[in-house]
Image (cartoon, rainbow, N blue to C red; front, side, top):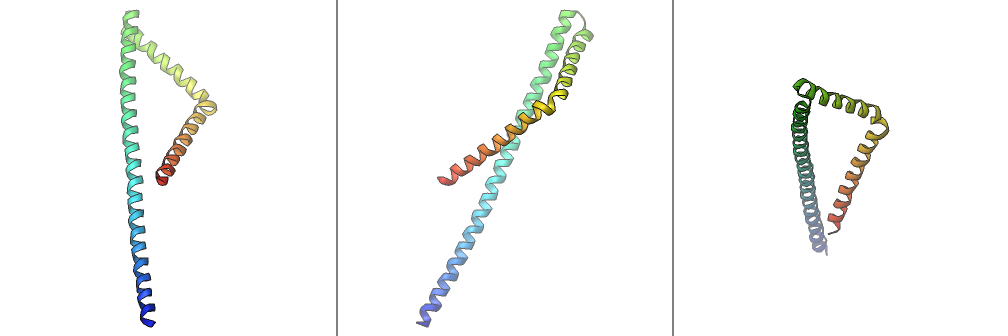
Length: 125
C-alpha cells in the first residue's frame, strides 16, 4: 500500500512538472506570437505611412508645378499650394478637438476590439 502511495505521489509530481513545463512553453510561444504580430503591424503601418507621405509629397510638387504652369510663375504656383496647406492646417487645428481626435480614438478602439475578437476566434479553434 505504501509503495502505491509513493508511486502515485511520484506520478503526481511528474504530472505537475510536465504541466508546468507545458505551461511555460505555452506562455513563451504566446509571447512570441504577440510580439511578432505587434512587429508585423508596426512594419506594415510604417511602410503604409512612408508610401502615403511620399505620394503626398510628389502629388504636392506635381500640383505646384501644374499651378505654376497655369500662372506662368513658379513662385506663384508653389505659393498657392503653400497657402492651401496653411488653410488646411488651420482648419485641422480648429476642428481637432471636436472631430479629429474623437475619430482617431474610435478607430483605435475599433481596431483593438477587432484584434481581440480575432484572438478569441483563434482560441475557439
